[in-house]
Amino acid sequence: VRVGGEALASIAQLRAMNHSYIYDNDYEISGRIVKGGLNTLPYNEVFVRVGGVGRLANGLNTNCVLHPYDFHGVDRTFDDGCGTPVALFTRTNMFKDLTALLRLRARMSSILGKETMLKIPLLFICPEHGTRVLTIGLQQKLLSIMSNSLNPFQNPHIKHKTQMNNISESHFQQKLQELLDLDDDDIRNVLTAEECARLAGGFGATDESVANLLMDVMLEDFKAERKSGLSQKRLQNIVNEGISASVRSNDFNTSRQLLILYTLVASRGREDTHKKSLKGTVSPSSRSHRKLLRHVSSITSKNETNPIVSERTPSSYPPPPPLDTDRLRSATNSDGLLSVLGAAEVLKSIQTNAAKKRAMEAAQSIEEWIEKSENSVAYRLASWRDLTTAQDDLKIATENHSNFMAFVSNKAITNRKKFAEQLRYAVDSTNFEGIEFLKSIHSIVSTMHSPCLRLELLQFILGLDNRYSVAHVERSVELAATCLNISATEDIFASDNESEIHGSLED
Image (cartoon, rainbow, N blue to C red; front, side):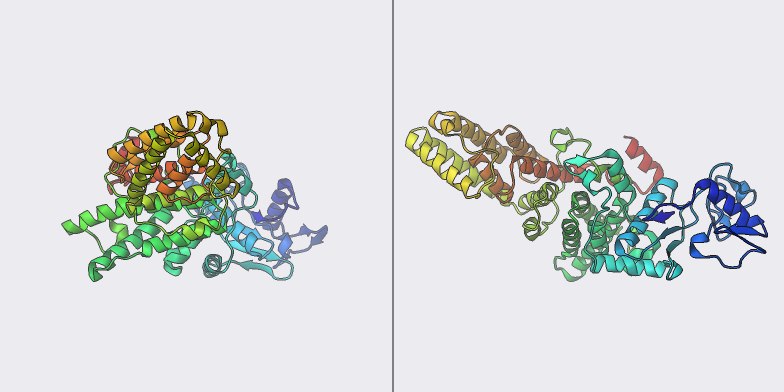
C-alpha cells in the first residue's frame, strides 16, 4: 500500500505479474522477456505475492487463528481477493508523508485488527535510494523529531471536515482510526512523558494510551508527594504541553480529549489512589492496578449525552488541579479551542473557589444597578452610553449592540432583575464544586438573547476574557460539566475483573 501517489498497474496486471514472478522461469519486465529470471528487480517492478487471507510474518499467517489451514502459507490463492498488504510504503522522505505513513498504519490496524498489521514493514522507495526500511529505531527517532522539532499538523485531507462547526461522520471516523497508539513499539520507554503528550496533542493518540500515560504520571506525582511532602505538578505540566501542541496544530478534538482525560485521572483517579494508599494496596506497578475505562473513545470523541440535563447524582469528586491556559487562550481564535480552553478556565475558577467570590460580587453589583435604575432614567441612559462605548472599543463581546429602547423602557431592568435572581440562586443553593453550579450558569446563558452587562459579568465569574460570546460561554460550561460528570460516574473506571468490566458497560 503506497502513501502519496497513484497505482501504475491494475489489480489484474498485479495478479498476473505476481504469478509470473513466483512460478515462471522466464517472465516479462517492462515489455522485455527475461530468460531464467532475475535475482534482483528494479524498485518499481517489485510485486510481492499477497494472495489469500493474511500476511505472512516470520513464516506464519497473521490470520492463522481464523484460517489454520494456511498456517505455513500453504494453498494461498487469490480466490478471496488480494489479501492484506505485505508492506506500506511512501515515495518521499518528507515529514508530511512519513507522518501520513504512520497514520495509515494506525488506520489499517484499526480496521483490520492489530494482529493482522503486526510488525508490518514500513518502506521508503525512490529511484535514487531504492528500497529502504523504516526500522523500529528510525520510527522512534521520527516520533522524537515530531514531538520536539516538527510543527504539529492534522491530516490536511480531512482537517476541514473535522472542525467543531463542520464535522463529517466519515471524516471524523477516519480521524479516530488514524490516532497513534503510544503503547505500541515501546514508544513510552523511548520518549519522555512530555514528548508523548506533545505527540498526543499535536498529531493525535488513542484515548486509552493517553489515559495510561496520564495515569502513570499521576502515580509518579503521588509517590513523590508521599516521599517529599511537597505538592507535585508534573501531571498539569504534561497536559499543558499536550494542549499547547493541540493549539499549534489547531486541533479542537485532541485538546478536548486531553482535558477530559486529565479531569478523569486527576480528580477521580487521584482520589481512588489516595484511598488505596490508606489501605496499603497501592502497587509499585501502575499497570497492575490501573482501572481505567475501557470505552474512553465513546466519551472523548463525542458528547452524546448533555451532562447539563443529566439526572446523575452530582459529583462528589472535586475539580482537577488548575491548568495554566492564559497564554494559550491569547494564541488562538478558533471557536473549538476557545471552548476547550474556556472549559479549563471554568474548572480552574471552581477549583480555586474564585467563581464563588466573583459570583457574589457580580450578584451584588447587578442588584445595586437595579436599585439605582428603577429610580432614575438618567442612570439607565448613562449605563447604555457606557456599554455602547465599550462595545465600540471592543472591550466586551456581545451578540448585538445594546438596544437603546430597552434602557428607556423597563426591559433592561426586567432582564437584569431575572439575571440577578438566577445568579443569587446559584450563589445561595450550590457549593460551587460540583455540576449543580454549572447547571445554574447554563440555565442563565441559555435564556440570553442580546446580553451586554450580563455577559460581561458571566465572563468575569468564569474567568473568561472579552472574546467569549454567549455561544463560547455556553460551550465552555457544557464541556466543563462533561468533565465533572465523567469523574462522578461510578462505572467510568472499569473493574480489574473482566466479567465485571463488561457488566458495568452493559449497565
